[in-house]
Length: 106
Image (cartoon, rainbow, N blue to C red; front, side):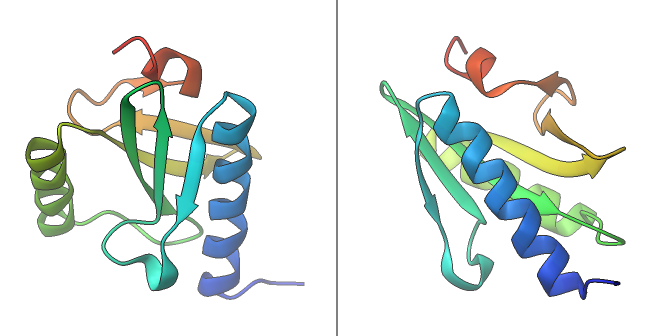
C-alpha cells in the first residue's frame, strides 16, 4: 500500500516525536506544519524539527527561513528524513548528522 505524501509525512513526524520523547524532550507537533513540524524542549534547550518524507525535499528558500528561525530563537534546527528505514537527523547549520541526545550538549 502506497502512502500519500501527507500520510508519509505524518508518520515520520510521529516517529521523530517518539524518538525525541525517548531522549527526554517535551515535544509539540505543530498543526498543519506551520511554521515548523515539531518543537522539542529539554533542560533549557530548544530544537526545531522539519520533517521531509517520501519525495519531499527542502528548498533553498525554506532552508533560509528555517535558519532564520534558528537565529531568531537560539534553537537548533534539524531536518528529519527517512533513510533506509531509519530516521536521519541533520543539523541544518553545519550539515552534520546528529542524535537527540547530542543536541542536549550543544
